[in-house]
Amino acid sequence: MKYLKIFFFPVLIILSFSCKEDFSPYAGHDQKYVLNCILRGDSTFQYAAVTSSFASSENFSSNVSDRFLKNADIRIWDDNEVYKFRDTVITTKIYGKETAISIYKTTGFVPKPNRKFEIVALLPDGKRLKSWTNLPKQVNFEFSSSDSSIPSKNNQFVFVRWESAGEDLIYAPEINIYYKKAGFPLGFAKKVPISYIKQDGKYYPNFATPSKERFVSIKMDAIRRAMNEISGSDPNKSNYTILTMIVHVHTYDKNLSEYYVSSAQSLDQFSINVDALDFSNIEGGLGIFGSYNSKKYVIKFNREFIGSFGYKVGVEE
Image (cartoon, rainbow, N blue to C red; front, side):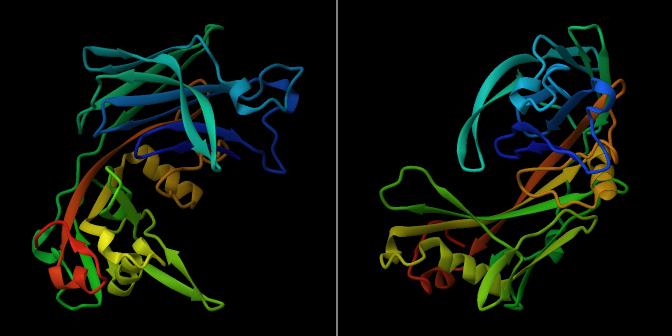
């Protein structure tokens, strides 16, 4: 299976490869090229990667960095505007280790919704890879049927609902509690599951997964448990200042949505898996060119609710 990782915040693209038992990308020494690019509607930084199925016919087992293809001419067309990518190196954590990743990057390009974008990658050997995406619009939240404060009115669930952004699109909710800790200039984000599952005496987080549903339901018990986990065993609860909880709703375009349906894989906050046998929308090669848009819904905490954990209030209800 070939898989592509995309980071929503910040957006990064990381390629890794493994194989199904019944398929080898190296069969017959047939070189394949993979183009991956996910446009983000709320960022001026866009990333792309071009890799080959192997670095050379003598080294089929080469690692991903060896298979990164340099000197490719990658451009995106937005009507009459053209944006060119330049190769660079970024450092990110992979499996807990700081790793340098070769990548293509362009700056100053913020794609607008409901527009069609074309990507073309001209490779050093003259091969051309191309594809298209339509950036979806941001969702509109249904404020009248969504909870605006915590605890919620029913004190059991917190609901957030939104209108459709387009037919057959996938939505990926991401929930975080934002807080500060004394002695640290920067704030923190605590990822919140929609529920916890108890197994063998332990509680495991159950995070929201992408789906076509236009709502997310978060158990109040999950929010309380997440609030407790912020300080953990630290007895100095007053060192923590709770700001707010934000639900980010990421809307995938048709390409990413079709991938998700075809693969039946979960797209977590950090990655999507691209199986070349199941899904590819790149002409002349393999990979995926897609896009997503994001919008946030802010939920404030009740002062008494924050105080019940011994924390300080950072934002008034």
